[in-house]
Length: 260
Length: 260
Image (cartoon, rainbow over all chains, first blue to last red; front, side, top):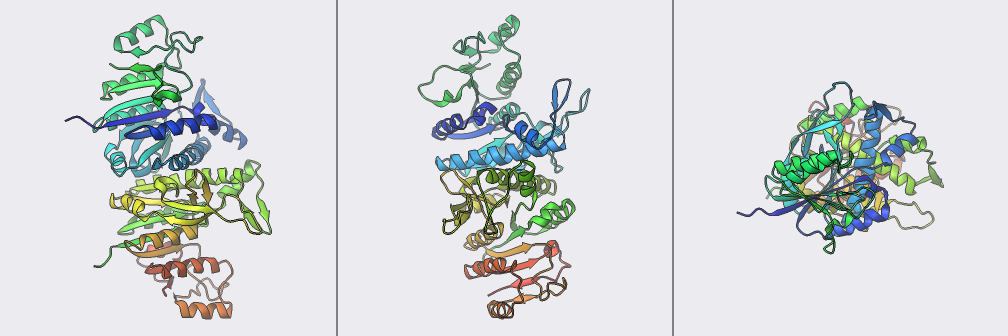
């Protein structure tokens, strides 16, 4: 039996910060046919609000720490401001959106990142995606919109990487659906030459990925994203695409497609 | 055919501000049998954050105005911080909560309060409660937790009185369920003598309400709440109870019961 298709779409923080870019993206997203899930980060707004509130960014060895006050700001900005603005805008576009954290109907459970050299604070690593719970919403005709927060099941919210949430939700949904995972960001795809924004690598598979790693073509910032892509593919996701907000426009055919 | 029972519970801001009071309340709420919906205000935290962010409270003739910046803070505090903390705590108590604004699956549509003498800004008056949408969540076994935000259907979130949301949601659900609406706040009920916190009026009906109005027994702050109660009763809600957070404790028998 052929499984029904689903699209899992992650948008980066820079799209969220630009009101017009977000509006354009949401119009395209609302037109995307079939079942779909949106996952968003929070961008720099959380940092901006934290600084306005006099909460200093805590860093250890260049790594950001999520203390109690920072988690409160993240919860306000991600789950409140950004998530509900997106939901209200999608409703105006006739997409029956529902905004969620991983705590809502226990959709995404995580555990606090174990302390080794560094205690990252209230940061979660995804442990379990409740794909049945998410599917209950989808079957009812709702479009889930996730922000980058999960919970530990004991009452604690945890700041969680949005790229990882996207790949883990995609893996969860791939148990029921033929799943395509889309990572939308400011570039047209993974670039061969970072100075040339048009030099998109149109296809990456396990073999070419190894070659790209070997030649050092892939930038450091792109590596964790690609790791998430291959994790997803190995765990059942059919395809991953990386590109800009036009990734859904039918005219767009310049993006990076990743498959095993 | 007897309709199934449902409980609509509204908690006031002062319970939310007190971490222990909230915890105790949520424990009682999670034990409350049957289908249930929680509605919460935001308390003084929004005002506190606004002031920390340097956003001055705007008042005209002693009435609070919700401008763009204030609405952003309210969205962050109500829909983010307060709502998601409650959801995470209820999950830990085995109540499968889902946090909502009126924008989520278009549950509560409102319109911006018409400008007469005063433009109140982004303040909504409830126009339509999507009781079918809410019931879809409840039938799936989820417990909706609403904050005091609605939307206009055109992409705009609107700050909306939590007492009114509670009575309007109760009216909506009464089309399907035998509905009891609970208003929980810091007092044991409507008082005969505001100086005596034990002087609870245990029963108010339309007739005694008129008498109480006539004798001036009811305080000014209680009047809009009681108006909401009688609105709800006239529109199909079976009973309204007003009391403190022990309203659900089986040992508690001191509260105000309101019926037509």
